[in-house]
Image 1 (cartoon, rainbow, N blue to C red):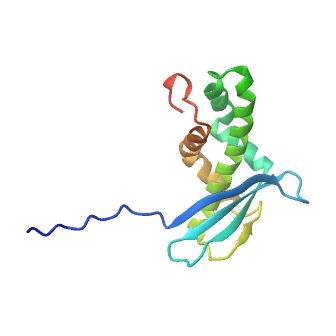
Image 2 (image 1 turned 30 degrees about the horizontal axis):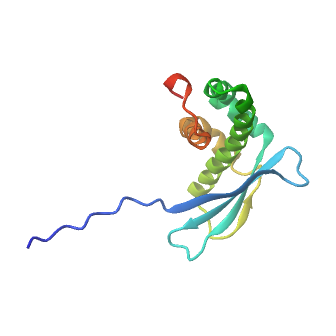
Image 3 (image 1 turned 90 degrees about the horizontal axis):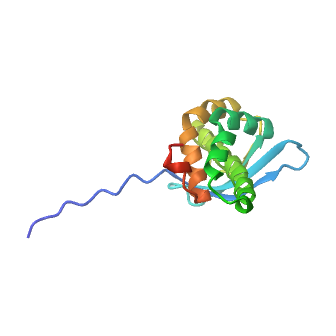
Length: 157
């Protein structure tokens, strides 16, 4: 009988992050949106909720940075006109969700305590602005997967 070596499990991410809801307007803060995430670190006994706010101006900057509108037009060009508006609306929400997720990742990288909290719109702005161009491909890939549409002509994002 030969001893078999145990297979090492793939590295599990240190946090499990799921979107709870959003984007929604922030009451009393015109031009600000919020997505709320459930965040659970493997070493924590329980998860926490993190509300991530983002200003519409920052969303607009990020859209320009990644060329979102042009990308979306190209992606949705193969759909029927009747379908396109629904997909476009969903894509806009998904962009905000993914941008908030990137902001949350920036906060986690900076150190996140096990407590429910709110990341205000003015927090971590520079880190988010720096992360957007670096993570643009990943951001668009996640949106594409959620939309469940094939890229235009099989071209790259």
